Image (tube, rainbow, N blue to C red; front, top):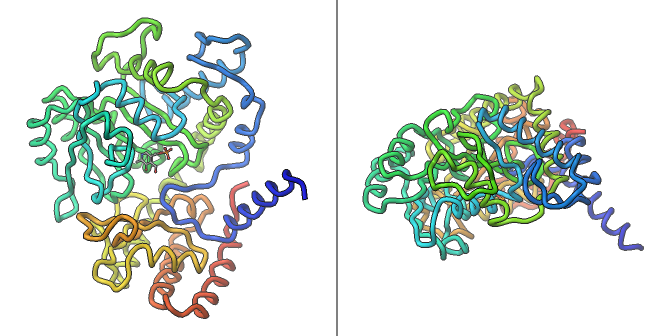
Length: 421
Ligand SMILES: Cc1ncc(COP(=O)(O)O)c(C=O)c1O
């Protein structure tokens, strides 16, 4: 068997797995064929350092067009004054923003790990944490963010950045309050919208840039079902990237552009940028808002259905695409639940709960997200059916025969909701 065939077989295997399984990992989604094709195009062959109209190498007629198209559409879709579309991932984008505005040793205020965190917000295992000083805030027992704590920390530590939004927080945020705190201490208010980008674009959840935030970052491959990359969106338009700008908030677009290139990255992935441009066009179609609304409806239905079955939920419900089950009153943990659900063909991810007494690899919670299955157009009826599968699996964790029967039921239902073509 040739090497090429083996790779193709592996890809085919993953395709079959994705078609048969139910994807409930909150950060995953399915890209359309047109988006996948753009990434497999000849644009992958091209180096295009710097920005449209100012490239370092020649032969940039089409790369300039595609990147400008992506920038213009991103600005339109997110109602921003400027968009940088070159960051290679969410982690890279966050680092580029921190490096743009902070000096080594400066303080960034972010959410505590167990309360909804993402590692790229300065977890101790990251390189970021060696360079910057991260100070953490938490949520209150009622599930709300502790804004008074953010204010007190800001007064004490004079941060350069206050960071909002996370990977596992099912509620809305008072952006205005955080932006006002940031203003008082001359910090930049940064929103990492990676998980909820689609709902902001569809105008169903508030846009931080409309509420005093200075910078918004989003990965492009979660609720946004686009290629793997990131957008950095700002208020204000950039100046001449060749001239080092003064460090003012109005100059953030130029400062960030220069931090992405040449500060942190070199050749942008033009095929990915092409995929993002195609996806941004799709995001302006009629389906766009109905998909976003359906995802929110499905998540709400799922939360209500679990509550009816006496499950404990972090923040007792949801206002976005996430439901986080809290097993601290059960005999099993998030890792056990994730493994059991793997056996029936349902992908989920273990998750911490606020101030989790258990370690991150055996946390007390399970995070469930509805974006991917809603791309396959499940509605609330099917969402209830999925809760039933999960409930039955968790009740019968040690009965492999029962789990095998459930697995067959999952595959049967999954076949009725094909991947996008
Ligand atoms: C809130 C948040 N920010 C950043 C990232 C990092 O994105 P990437 O995997 O593209 O580096 C993630 C990924 O899970 C995330 O959830």
